[in-house]
Amino acid sequence: MRKSPSLSQAATEALFKLALIAMLLLALVLTGCGQSESATNQSATEPGGKKLSVVTTIFPPYDFTRQIVGDKAEVTMLLPPASESHSFEPTPQDIIKIQNCDVFVYVGGESDQWVNEVLESMDTSHMKVITLMDCVEVREEEIVEGMEEEEEEADETGGAEAEEVEYDEHVWTSPRNAMLITQKISDALCALDTENAGTYQSNTVAYLTKLKELDAAFTQVTAEASRKTIVFGDRFPFRYFTDAYGLDYFAAFPGCSTETEANAATVKFLIDKINAEKIPVVFHIELSNEKMADTIAEATGAKVRLLHACHNISKEDFQAGRTYLDLMSGNVEALKEALD
Ligand SMILES: [Zn+2]
Image (tube, rainbow, N blue to C red; front, side, top):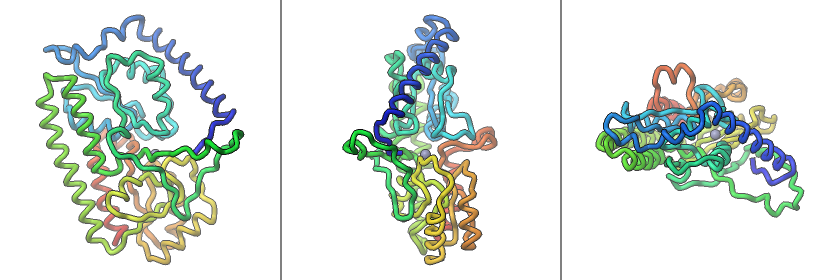
């Protein structure tokens, strides 16, 4: 993940730019000239005008926005349900959706760096752009004992630029950050759509109350727990979460790692931890193959449980209208078991 500039990276970026230009041209052909002109936010404040349109990349800001606007605005998530957020690539239709929206919300981390190139290539004067990472206090990505670091790309310039600070992008995994993000999105929507601002504000107050209850539930579980350490036979995207509730953790890979197969030493390290501290649960995250968690469970007798990081949700959950609060409530129960 900590990639240093290299020839192959430069080539990849050049290719990406070419692909982006091709997509934008296609987008222009598909929309017809000048149509994006008509999609300004002005209409949102006119009586009977078009609804405000909000586009988000991943699930959490999509759900937060949905809770704020109810049926008063259109909310679109670009990431298809059940798909992997770190390898997402926008289609020409996605580019059109971004170009035509009034508010665009993305993470601002390393897995959606494609957004920067997309925004640079279009006229964004009519839209409000929000990144999740600007809403909160960001923390550096962490490598803890036993964790496998991804192999660094060979640095041909001698290593001076290799130590670039990498911030953890999974800011939404802490309910406290979810509150900050919700407030920021709400403020932007109220400013753009004064006609519906009253509704947005009261929905926001109600939603923040629920997030506060969620936060209190996690605080209570950790306060009453007999242990403070959780173990992941998987990637670990919960830095902000464990920091918020004073938990320690061990995991196979950092949050955005593309690795799924751990080496034997990593698996042994996690097995030994669980055995030594008699930890009752080994976690996996959503949309995982769960193989490593299963292996660790077989060797230790620990139960396998899901701690949902909410990057994305399954098709069934999406269709059932499940929310961040639903997924996080499941996490409260799973954490209770794991800290028992
Ligand atoms: Zn991630």
